Structure formats: C-alpha cells, structure tokens
Image 1 (cartoon, helix red, strand yellow):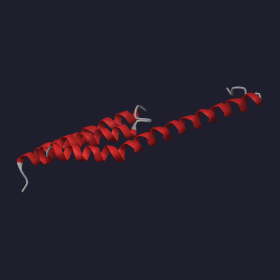
Image 2 (image 1 turned 90 degrees about the vertical axis):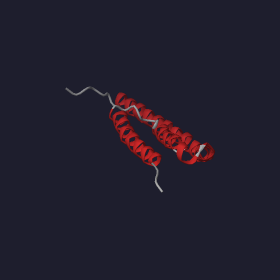
Image 3 (image 1 turned 30 degrees about the vertical axis):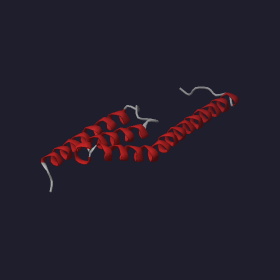
Image 4 (image 1 turned 60 degrees about the vertical axis):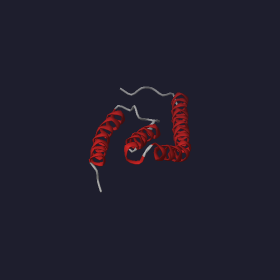
Length: 110
C-alpha cells in the first residue's frame, strides 16, 4: 500500500526533476554544461538515491550507491576523456585553418 511518505517523496522528486531540468536547460543555454553532462547525471541520480532512504533504508541506499558508483565512475571518466579529445580536435582544426589562411595570404573581407 502507498503511504503518505511515498506520496510526499514522489511529489518531492517530481518537483526536483522539474527544477533540475530548468537548471540544466539554463546551463546548456549559457554553455556551462559543456564537458560536465556526466556530473549533472550523477547529481540527479544521487538526489534520487538520497530521497529513497526513508522508503528503503540506509542499507539499501548504500548498496545502490556502491552499484551506481561502480557502473557510473567509468562513464564519468569516459565522458571527460571524450570531451577533452573533442576539444583537442577542435583546437587542432582551428590551428590548421589559421595556418592555411596565412599560407594563402588571407585578407579580411570587408
């Protein structure tokens, strides 16, 4: 049977999800999330796990925390590596384009 605690936690998580979505949307619009998407996911999952403590107990929370950490940590590291690789490629491409323009006697168009 669903208890009042279940309902309160469910509504609280729904409101958190709505607010977190607005935060992520704002971060994306301002370019602040770039390279940190995995951390935003970790933050959302952590809040959900913390909210589950009254429903499942601290032991279940700790078990799930270990499980999510074990599967999520490599994803966070991989996400950062992919972001760094993309940034490196973008910088190299920009450098090559600049050198090509210099070789071709680039002049700024009016």
